[in-house]
Length: 217
Image 1 (tube, rainbow, N blue to C red):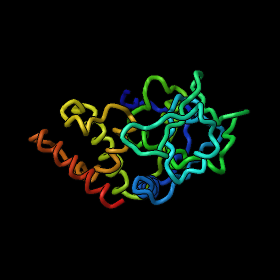
Image 2 (cartoon, rainbow, N blue to C red):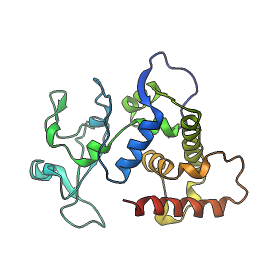
Image 3 (cartoon, one colour):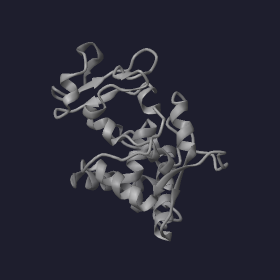
Image 4 (tube, rainbow, N blue to C red):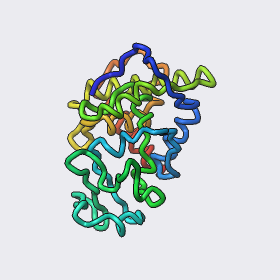
């Protein structure tokens, strides 16, 4: 995982209003609806070796062939993972598109690679297609507050990335998705923040803010 370059991309794709996107993203993290992503022809999330969590209410559980499923440690049945094929494609990705699109899992409804663009990080070295799109996203800002929120999310992601080994084991954030999600949850701690005097105490505040966010689910 790397911080995104500040170099302008030759191609820009409108990511929408940052303020509206942030509200929708936080609502989705609380379980209040999915994301409306202007994917266009991009199928990066379907072809980048993601394992997809299937929840009890997902109709996909009754459709996906059992050979593509495995259990999720610590979660009771019927939680399961839909595992990618050897080529990195989702097993339900056929003829260039999702074969169960109208019944796709909640995980797919919630997925939005703009969360990496918001956090100023890429999706990891093994996901070049998604990283290309991340670098192309360009948000609009309706207010200075929206810009400040975006800067705060990037500051949160940078802090979490730098200090990830200092977090307690049960709160370890070792992959880009987890870091981006946590940054969205706790960004308000970083708005207008200039200097952090006690990094250990601040990590505790981050964990508490994340728990408070999740408690509103």
